[in-house]
Length: 162
Image (cartoon, rainbow, N blue to C red; front, side, top):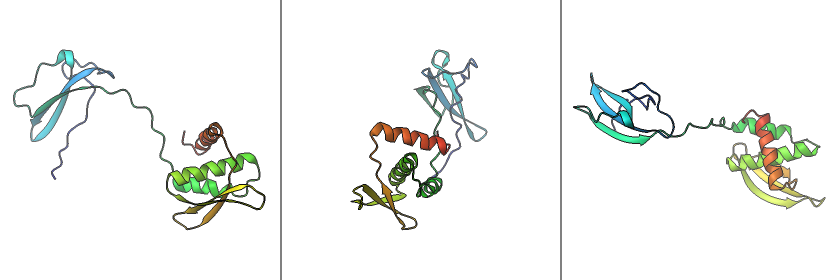
């Protein structure tokens, strides 16, 4: 397959020099110059029509500004946090560890093995690390949905992923 190097949208009208704003209609035209493809964008009200010898043209709408993306989740950092919380005796540490286990299952780094009840009558989640094969016992703190969401937000904040 042949690849072509074509510039992306400029968001600036080639005829007027004014910036194209989200929601503006525009026309883009592709021409060839010195063996290369050249793209030019035009505001709809400044579109002169396709120039002679054009290769392609199309109409579109400038998309809304992109929201900043969350940084990628580093599974190894999350596993490290999960491991450090293994001996957590406080409720917050147990909650963090449980939510970290759920996130790691969602990311397929941990695989659900079983849910059991321990000798004290508490529910325990058994998860296997898909890389190491280690099975972890994770007590279920019985978080409500809003509590789990709050713990996840705090976990992302602590790890710098917000």
